[in-house]
Amino acid sequence: MNTEDISELIYKRLKEQEDTLRLQFDNSKNSIGYFYLDNILPEALVNQIGEVFPKKEEMNQKKSLREFKHVAAQMDQYNPLLEKVIYAFQHDRIVKLVGKICGIEQLEPDEHLYAGGISLMAEGNFLNPHLDNSHDKNRDKWRVLNLLYYVTPNWEDHYGGHLEVWPNGLEDDQITLHSRFNRLVVMATHQKSWHSVSPVTFNGERCCISNYYFSDIPLKASDRFHVTSFRARPGQRIKDMILGVDSFIRMNIRKVFKKGIKENPHVYNKEKKD
Image 1 (cartoon, rainbow, N blue to C red):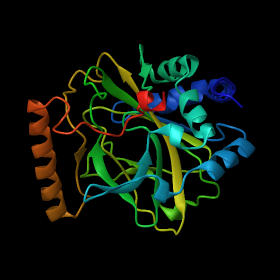
Image 2: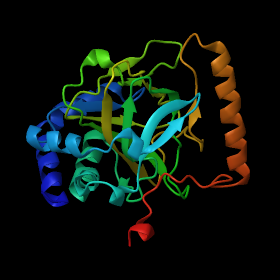
Image 3: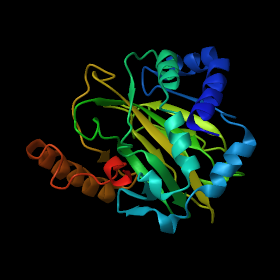
Image 4: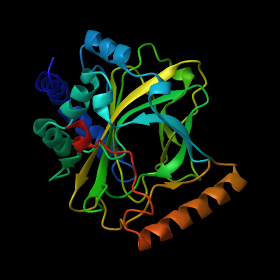
């Protein structure tokens, strides 16, 4: 199948549930807007996607107090099916329909996959509560939606590795959005959209395909530029203090250097592909 074929399947599935998805998002948008939908693509195709997903050793490892995961964006290094699926979610009809569901106009996908692409989380991996970087790689547009598509067959809820949103901040309970096979989760990103991924407790690999949509205007009028900012989980006071200092330092560096001291390498370098 080509990208066009895959995007048509995604579009039809979203369109079937458009009203339900809009209600999901509307009911949550006053805090962190989100919706999720299962059975996005035919099961046989998703099984194929899972089969060609690279092993963690073939991806870039990110390991620190903030996070422990494996990521990749230079998609020409991997099976072409993965790139087709990623860009199927960037098709104009998909972008417009997701925007309609979420009540957001003038959305733009990111062909460079800045912080997007593919990710893998294995046993012991985690992602602490954080706010995503507010902008694209050139700091010209606002990041407003995060699309996460999970493709690991037979991933049980008790394995961990699930998206958690904290609509009332870290002082209140989180909402868990399970990373089930063939599920798409769409989440709003703004100044208060704290989210995390629960630690993986199973000897397996939870695989995800991700995209971000951007806009010329922020999702909320109160939004301000910020780097990716991490916190610790509730009860981890010392770790929280360290991560707070870390975010403060990185934020001040970005006030001086627009793209940081070192530009984020997590992009799809199309020139390299050419």
